[in-house]
Amino acid sequence: MNRTNSPSGARIHPAVRWTIAAAGAGVLAYCARHLDSHAVWRSICGIDPAYGLAAALVMIVAKVGAKVMRSHRLQEDACARVGVVAPPLSMTARLLAASHAAGQLAWGPLGFTVRTFALREHGLPIATIARIHVAERIAEALGIATIAAIALAIEPGAILGSLVGKLLISVLAAVVLVALAALLSRRVRARLAARALGGRALVQATGWAFASSVADACVIALAARGMHVEAGIAPILLAFLAVNGACALPMTPAQLGVQESAIVVAFATAGIAAPAALACALAYRAAHVVPLLAVGVPSLIATWAPQRSAS
Image (cartoon, rainbow, N blue to C red):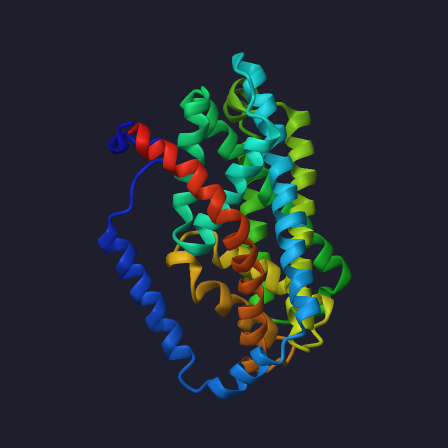
């Protein structure tokens, strides 16, 4: 397989990647220059293993599991449109585990590339694969928007009372308005009707995406509880929105620093001290890394190795 014509889209030059990573590391180091590292270490050492295990299980079973069902439903609909046999559920689960392992342990776009090549080897046309990926992003965005609406309904004062909350909600509202304006265009609606996936499939996928978002918020809550931090519902939901907003683009390898900074800033709105907030953020990352090392890495190797040997 020719890697120069990657179906994953434009490739980012390694020098650009490392420049972004170095800049992110520099910003993180500057922000953490007054951080009490000993306090962070003491918090990490005092983690409750029961909550840590629960967070890891919720991540791999509920969060990733819901994403598997989301992708599988969209793949079934897309394959039915072009007369191709849809990948089995077991393959979808393996690809999602591999994709998450690549994103959390290496570089986000790598997971996209692995999935794209694997689906193409299964016989899906590149246009169909692209349509599936776009539909997944739409379903995921709708799930996150639903969480934001729930957060505003439950804790409007706490969410809008912080600069971070106002910024996140403003960006989300702007995206929704742009989407609604696009849908008012007859040409856009015609293109969606001709090229987009079926409405029922997208609705079902959005339901699974919402379930995955709820699971992700639960992972943050369990990680905080494991670090003996009593975070309320508002900072948990704000941290979830901040993480998804900050990690929308692959800024650093494995989003190191970006993800942690988002949680620390969100928790600061609730008066949670930076050392405790950073400990929660590291526990949240560990809840992803540990199960992905056990499940995702073998899936990534099983998916990537045959593609390399065939290229």
